[in-house]
Length: 288
Image (cartoon, rainbow, N blue to C red; front, side, top):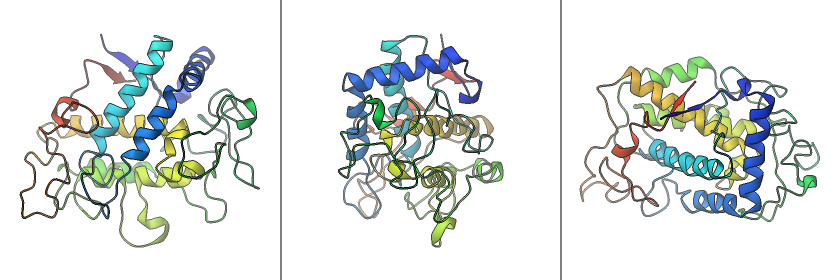
């Protein structure tokens, strides 16, 4: 029977507490840091050689769907009542709304060093020391809204623009494509400055701090953000039911994307699963 993923703003006090406690427990056991390492290892860009699975590629959405399921399975081994909530950043857009409350993820970082000092994931609590990182920092950092160069969270109109595109993805299957739902949602835009960051990418920039790079999983908001991104994929699938994940076949030897992107029936590293098997998850979970 499918379980429910809820909007984080609707969680009861008990549901918030159980979700936080499950996160802290898998961190205590060392499981959480394995997720951070996996994301760092697969943080590959257009300019890097080899296969791209997690970012700047068609498999951005199924890769993170499988990643979220792995985290959710770990949480549910601790407490079977827990599911991943999602953060609808088109509606909850202030620094005082969920998930930035003391009983959930805590608030913004302090001005001096962006260290998060409130909530259960504050460094001073002793329960959330950063051990897997691309820098030497040991504490969680945030810069909500980017104080030095303010930006806004994506609006509903930004999401609607992505949802309206009936094509899943197009050649050259990377960060430069202007058509296709995947990149409009992932958010690699043209130009410079804040205009170049859209939807998913802009949220990472808005949160700032450790959410800016490959070690972004160290901030638990990563999961709530990507759960909403996954929800948006389900909405696109419902709206454009006749369209599927692309490419259906791998690019040929003459393509500059040869062996660099995952086709519909190819295995999605690091798992033994293909994108087509991740297109329908209605038997596992649904969104409230």
